[in-house]
Length: 299
Image 1 (cartoon, rainbow, N blue to C red):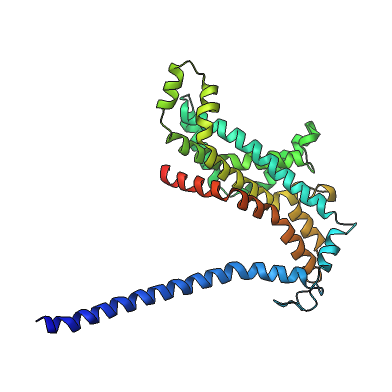
Image 2: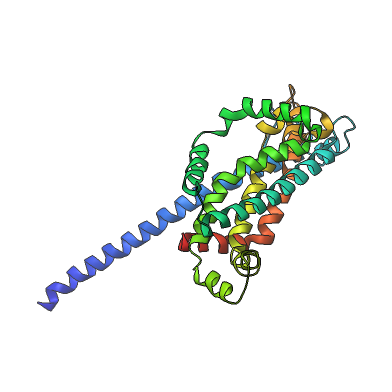
């Protein structure tokens, strides 16, 4: 009986071993395909930025006579102030992210910890507004900022303050829900214990609750920064002068009507523009992973 079972067991073992090897090979194949689709566009843009021909027609993965001519043409241009656009994007994204995060955190804390009339209605209204695409409100946003500019020119059209105001309003809705969900998982015993010791709501929020929110605040702040930094539509509509343009709008204007001839400088500008995002991810990657995993477990 044992002599008959040995070949059968050997055959099953070989079958299982073959299935494992096949599964491993398929995983490697899928991983290589995904890596290719992730890395190839970056290599292509890098190659285009080093291609002195600066045209799509002569684009190759390994360009001949590679050099930094495209970077010089872009950075030394007197007509198109690249560094001004670059600074405008960083300034607008940073200010809007910080202000939006501050207001969102206070609002989420109020919705999570306080009970007041209209609380549920406001939460449902915020959620309902987020259902509609932002593109539907472009005309209304343009008219609203134009009318606000008639009263307060500082927040009108062609101003960074007006654009920041729009970014803040657009980002707070979904972030309030995210932060409220995270705050609901923090035990209320912390608040009650602090109140017994005589702490006020502001002291509870700043000294006890806020440190616990640091991972999710970093994640939301980074997402806000990336969303506003890479925005093109709103910035293109609300900003009119060259000195006020953000990087995305400036690069589009720079290549307007001559994209195939200015492909090299455009690629160079895109790579330089991606540096802040790369630096943020490299510097805060541990906090990002921690915030996402904590949110997944607690939410």
